[in-house]
Amino acid sequence: MVLAVVVKAQQYTRLRDELLQMEKIDQEARNKCTNGTAEEQVKCIGEITKTIDEQNTKRLNDIFDQIGFPDTAKVGKDGMQAFMIVLQHAPTDELRVKALKPITKAFKNKELDPMGYANFVDRLRLHQGKKQLYGAGFEFKDGKMVLSPTEDMKNLDKQRAKIGLPPIAEAAKMMNETYHLEVVVPEN
Image (cartoon, rainbow, N blue to C red):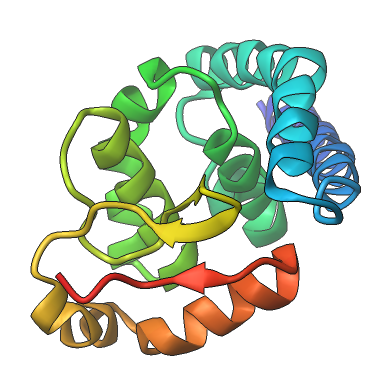
């Protein structure tokens, strides 16, 4: 019985390391896309979707099917965060839908940071044709980064503050610093 527990813990340690490596490759590739025009950045990200994201999504699905949501108890905080970052770039929503309840639980248990949760929720909502809640999503439009459709713009900063996010103006500034493009936050 003790041996089984040790083997399981070692398996999850290896899984944590695998998730961290997936995140590293994902982020290095995306960082290379943040220079140039909006068109060049979109093209670069499109290539990453084919070369990295599709393969990562398949692996994340396998992981989820084998052990469920890789929360902090299974893969540590950094392993779970790596899973979340890689999941953000999944080209399909199948796994996002399956993971919604455990991710919400992880956020409520303070295992997941507000930005990770907002990115997850808003991306899923946008992909489902709904408006986002927290203003986490931006899209390339007319050579700029434009806030994706968002519910209740008038109270957006209050909605963001409720879950621990900074005001949308700070998020827009960070987007500008990352992508080196004009960032637009529509008033309505």
